[in-house]
Length: 368
Image (cartoon, rainbow, N blue to C red; front, side, top):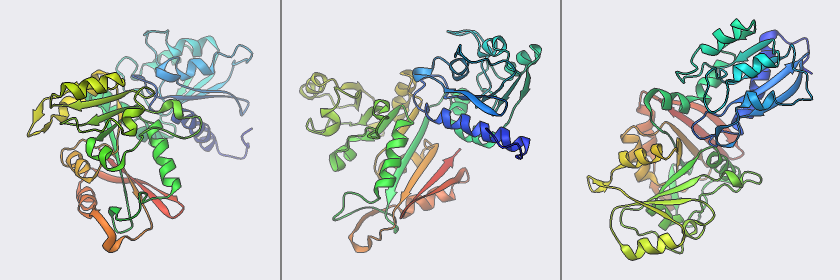
């Protein structure tokens, strides 16, 4: 039960935060639909909660209102996004809200989808259901940044990350790991919040990563894996190839090597030939392939060179800097100081979040 001494706006923000906690559980796993969280409150008590189901259906509001043992009459509904009001593969969420006699609907952000934009409020008010928008709006603008970009520009959303020492080296002579287990755990969570991981053959050759999510309970949300490998140099013994029968794995290439292509096909690796542009795979065509296949949240795990290419060409939307407390000094390789200086000078770059991970730090940059 929410304490009565709290101010009303604080109460609404509190329940909306709970709704965002629900939405975050579905982030990156709802296909073409946005991840939405919904909580329902009656007499200051939480009586139901839900998030958008895997692959985008059913919607959060429909799931939260589907419990036949609960009397929802007179309840307050909190949704992170404006409820849908159009007919698609299912009937509108506004209809079930009316059917269950919800008293008031609070939502954080209007749905940028033109089919629903600002229509739920009008429809619900027609049903004599009160509506209040922009509850905890800042969270909505940040959480739905990818969905806004997709609806506004039809582009995919690209996040990337680098881990560095305190003096901004990305590797050293001795240690495989720069950051601690808490930073690495956060990377696994980021993987689960994206529908695809993009890497390069150079990263595979150097680090031989698995590129899956290994957090208990989230393994099934490991994203599809994509490798940029112009000349098909990826080893058949690499972890990403040996696990392709368990996690969908794709290789973008240009050089035709029928023997290697056959071997990759035999272990269930999908290969996509991409034309060259300036002696490299045409990245715009890679993006087009991802978008056409329904991959909207891409997480890049690669080295400084590829990240620099993405930054220079305005492909990065969010960037995560895992910042260790270790000093590498003379034993360090590949200093990334130039990269972060460049990013900090970009007008559209804004540091959004700083999280302490024991001795490490996570800095999140938004590049609009």
